[in-house]
Amino acid sequence: MSEYKMFIGSHVSMGGPDYFVGSVKEAISYNASTFMFYTGAPQNSFRVPLERCKIEEGKKLLLEHGFDLSKLVVHAPYILNMANKTKPDLFEVSKKNLINELIRTEAFGATMLVLHPGAHVGQGIEAGLENIVEALDEVFSKDGTKVKIALETMAGKGSELGANFDEINYIISHSKYPDRLGVCLDTCHISDEGLDLSKFDEILDLFDQKVGIDKILCVHVNDSKNPIGSHKDRHENIGYGHIGFDALCHVVHHPKLNNIPKILETPYFNEKPPYKKEIEMLLKETYEPDWRDNL
Ligand code: FE
Ligand code: FE
Ligand code: ZN
Image 1 (cartoon, rainbow, N blue to C red):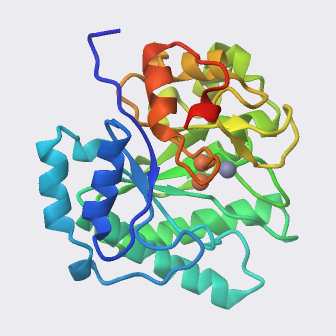
Image 2 (image 1 turned 45 degrees about the horizontal axis):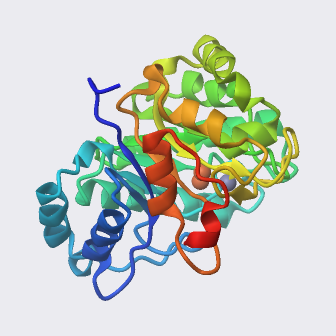
């Protein structure tokens, strides 16, 4: 296990006054070796101008601490929806905002942007997938960056698309820009969609068959509050959910996923971030029962 460096971290916040510098400091405080951030609020597309984000200072700090810019992950706001055209305004605004997110991602020096593919909201799966392909083609023809979009595997809540590997593959294989598309595997979502994480090798084989394992750009490591197939999308702390520590530890240390950034998006407990402890246990491959009580 020592021939490769493990890239593991969590989502961190990016808010004023320190912006990117604050994000880097937060990641350092968790002993993380990478991290994920939204370049503004996750729920909206309002974005602080790049000049105010303390990007150069943050980059300097992260390089001093041995982080690798190519392993940083940016997440697009989740209100974007390119799967539904019945609200033409939202479709247009989503494309425009996605272009802006790609430009911002590149400005931070990061190379990948995680995106929820979208929800068809009654338009139907096929139409929804076609809308996404069309929107992404337009975005990639205009954004002028080299940033890759990692389509996140979703929990299948409501009319969310990208919940199974066939849908993910549909988007990538129909795109005019397949080289700019990859995948972010979310363990909670995969379990909620109906796959058993205790058989992760089989899941990876299935993914390889349907999409191609080299398309995996990022892994979201979350336990799930709900049993397999629940389609609920409620993340749980590592070891407290239905997936469990051993299965998640196996994912994190899987030899086929070496060098892929692993990002925790587990909930705070008693208003405290759990990430330092979760990272420590996953790196040590040792679970400490009731660890949350000592946060
Ligand atoms: Fe996500
Ligand atoms: Fe996720
Ligand atoms: Zn989720």
